[in-house]
Amino acid sequence: MNPRYITTRNSPSKLLLDKLAWAHQVYHANLGWFADKYSIQEDLPKFKDIKSVFLIGSHATKDNWHDDTSDVDFKFHIPGLTSMYAQIYKKEVLDKLLHDGEKRDWVDLWFAQRDDQITHPRYSLTKHWNKFNKTPQAVLGRAQIGQLEHQAQ
Image 1 (cartoon, rainbow, N blue to C red):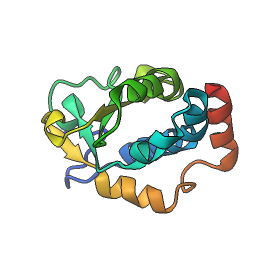
Image 2: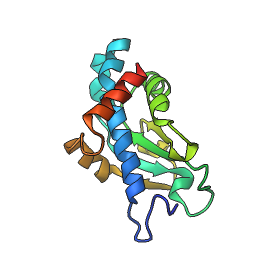
Image 3: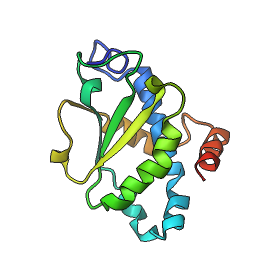
């Protein structure tokens, strides 16, 4: 596993959990205004119905990653999510907010409607994501979340 993200005990590193928490905050903090903008409020439950979250690709392996250019990729399993709006949300909101600083600091979020669309290698982060659902303000303060919401609009 990429030692920046997975420890020798096969646990997520603090850096990985921080990036996951940041992704969680950005993902949820911007859903409301995005749904209003595109008049898709009826789709909000689908966007929130995340069945599983994975670290994917070279980030989940020992090889094929480079410390100075390796961002992090998470893939969400969300059954029933309309891919058109998911792609718009990714491109217009998530990428703009999560591609901040140097490439190695970036977070990429991807979507899959079926579990078999989440390729291997992968490393499950679902239980950590679900913990953030219970304490959504745990990592970023309200002021920081406000800046993210404002920056995206």
